[in-house]
Image (cartoon, rainbow, N blue to C red; front, side):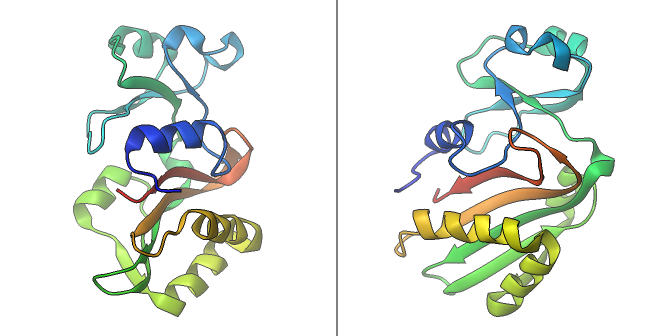
Length: 180
């Protein structure tokens, strides 16, 4: 299956096709009462959008919310819980093979600005398996088996954490699976 855009990917993500992800809701009012004491974020379905806000209390979420078909509410992860932000890609054309990019800093935005560490091919897969363990590694490889179309590059973006969170409590949270 080709994941042509972010909306398609989010639909699959929210249906649980890629395993564990953060819980999401269409509007703040849909957040269950028993979860309203944690932190939230406002995210966008637009490809390339950098307009998102994290670490909002429920009251701040309600104040910051603007109705738009592109917005949705997501749980937030405390920065101290983050072990690594990871992107694993299978490149088909420019330099074929596996590419692993990661940053072990707790601030994802700083990681984006300061760059990631990069490993390639067998070294990338060995490091990944050591970092996330066999069960999570098997899950990631299963995603590549199902969605790898060989003529398109495929990337799985996820965060590995100190504690279990999300829809299927696990220490790995998948953010995106993309061909775009």
